[in-house]
Length: 126
Image (cartoon, rainbow, N blue to C red; front, top):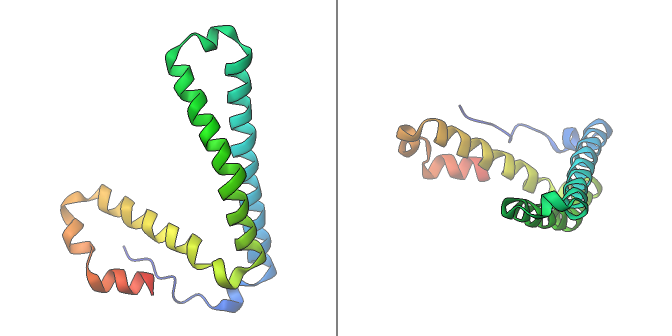
């Protein structure tokens, strides 16, 4: 399975529909991340029974780290993508290609050598 993002024109990526859809998706993911992590942090901090378990402290640490990422990296990435489509459009598409390539290679580990070639990397990244 090969993903071909090179046939998408600049005008299609800069259309108001795409920008609006991306804005809504980014906002929904950002709000869900922030609200979910704040709820986890508040629950562990406010309830004594949740504080006593060592595994809940690891979950608290993970929620704090995830909240820090959401408040710093996710906000700036979403703003850069929505406000400046021309320069930051490569980043989200590249992440999608890397994720799909990782999924395909993990789902068929014995075909990894045949799917990852210099030409396929060059065509996907160009």
